[in-house]
Structure formats: structure tokens, C-alpha cells
Amino acid sequence: MKKISIIVPCYNEEQALPYFYKEINNISKEIKKNFEFIFINDGSKDKTIEIIKKYSQKDKRVKYINFSRNFGKEAAMYAGLKLSTGDYVAIMDADLQDPPSLLPRMLEIIEDKKTDYDCVGLRRISRKGEPPIRSFFARRFYKLINKMSKIEMVDGARDYRLMTRQVVNSILELKEYNRYSKGLFQFVGYNTKWLEYENIERVAGETKWSFWKLFLYAIEGIIAFSTVPLAIASITGFIFCLISFIMIIVIIIKTLVFGDPTSGWPSLVCIIFFVSGVQLFSLGILGQYLSKTYLETKNRPIYIIKETNINE
Image (tube, rainbow, N blue to C red; front, side, top):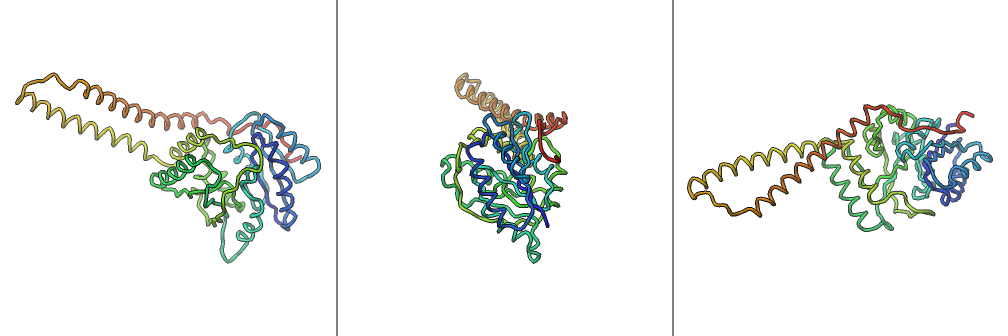
């Protein structure tokens, strides 16, 4: 009998875990497969790891990975994928925004030999319950990155997906330190079926993704899968050089014909500030790419495991 690995990254999810475990346990009884539940405690400051350990004592299917500190969701997902042993692997959030009830349908699709799908993913068709400004910038981000990147990013795509072992192995070959999984899933390719569903709010607890964290995550995605910002910086520099050259000629002609007036200092100061801002913006773009390269060359581990019951 084939096995399904359920990977659940957790960060301060003590309130949501009882609901999630009850739900996924009920769903697993409907599916005639072997299961393993891999909970990754990503440096939680509450009782998340204590709750997971209690589940593991009464349910041998429950495995846990306890990080030495908070390494982020990307590291947690990578660790879960690396240590999973299932023929099929699914990634879910513990807050039930990724409905386990859809898992049977996802399994049915991926096992259908007529369709030959390697991955079944979920995408939200609405963002009900989210702050309007957050939804607005999320949609603008997907439009922007799809124009800048050769890899298509699906608007509303969740990390919740069911994958074959072949897909998982391909993702694990991408060992980069700066990870943007939505892009990595698209990069490896394979036939993917997207199931659409209405947005579901958290069952308990609070979201860990502030607007600022999402903004930094968006920058991570753009830098990881596009070099267009570097081209923009180069083109902007060329345009300003051309404008400066034209203005020098205009000033020389104006001085020879009309003399050398001393007016226009306010506009000159504004131009200096504007050009300086463009230069700093371009340097910031270069700095982002350089910093990512610097972190990659250090070759630091993506995560550090403090304790685990896997292979016990």
C-alpha cells in the first residue's frame, strides 16, 4: 500500500493544532493509504512542540522535527520534503486555511492514469477576509513578477499541494539557501492540476505574515527568478546619461546665444535630489543581488535540527 506524507510547518500554532490534527486524522481514515504526519516546529515560543510530542506518543504516524531556532517556513518545508518517505507528499498549513477535506479529491486526480498529473495544487479564487490593501498588493505582485520572470507564477497559488515522489526529488535537487518555493515548484515543471477554492480564514490563532514580511518575501521571489531589475537599473542609468549629454549641449548653445543666467537653482536642487535617488535605488537593486550571492557562497545549512523522532 502506498504512503502519503503530510508536511506541516508550525510556528506558534498551539491553538490551531488540536483542530488540525482532528481534521487530518478523520480524513486519513477515509483514504486507504498509509500515512505519516511530519510536523516541523520552526522555533515556536509557545507549547507547539509539547502538543506535537503528545500526539506522537499516542499516534505512531506522527513525526516531528524540532528546529534549534526559527529558520522560516521555507526551511521547514524543505526539511519536511527531505525527511519524508511517502510515495505522495502534501504540504499543509496547521491553521486549516489549507482544507484537508480536499485531499481525497487531490489523490483521485493524481492517481488517475488518464490525466497523468504529477502534482495537484490549490489556488484561491478570492481573498475574502484579507485586508483590502494586502489583497491589492498581492495581485499587483503576481502581475509584476509574471512580466519580469520566465517562470509563470500562478495568482492565488498556495503551498498546499500533493506531489509524486518524482516531483519531490526534483525539488530537493534545488539546494539554494534563498528559497522561494512557489517559484521552485514552477521551475521543476511537471504536469500540474489546479483546484480552485474560496479563501478560508484561520481556525485559531493569528497570522505570522505581516505586510512587511510579505513585502520582503515578494522581493525574495523577484530576485530569485528574474534579473530584470538589474536591466532596469542599467537602462535607467543609460537614459540619464543620454539626457545629461543632451542638456550639456543645450546649456552650451544657450550660453553662447543668450549669455549665462544664474537663475534656476531650486530646479537644479530638485534634479540633483531626483538623480541621487535613482542612483541609490539602482545601488539598492545591485545590493540585493549581491547579498543573496554572498549568502549562497557561505554555504550555511538551510536549517538545524535540535531533535526529531524520525527513524526511531
